[in-house]
Length: 137
Image (tube, rainbow, N blue to C red; front, side):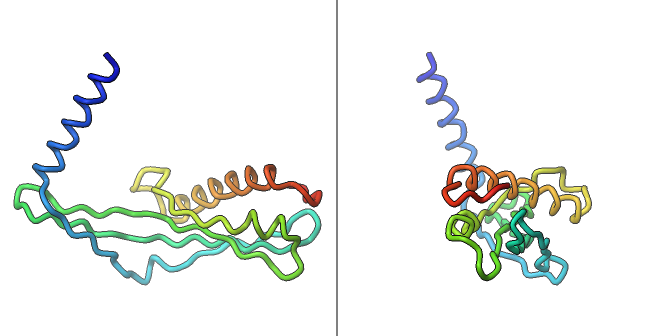
């Protein structure tokens, strides 16, 4: 039963993609999508800078009956200051692209804050996994 349901869903999604037809995706460069940052310090005084960059993509379909769309993704990454332990450096190598976690009508600063919070959750999870040198949260 479940296998048949998966097949039906996959067939419907394939049909929808065929009806949409070919598309072109272009990254839109805008000055208001500039890099935003957050600077913080760990308990032991190591500096971590977290950056969030909004990327905007224009999806243009070749078929006249499909409207063009604008999609957003947020590139979030961190830079660790000099003298940080290897475990912290390895955990901060995390480089993610996240979809908007809130409705698109929210202010960009609110959405960026949510993206940074999601990144901090991922970073905390990685630090818990790599806690070799006694680095606390």
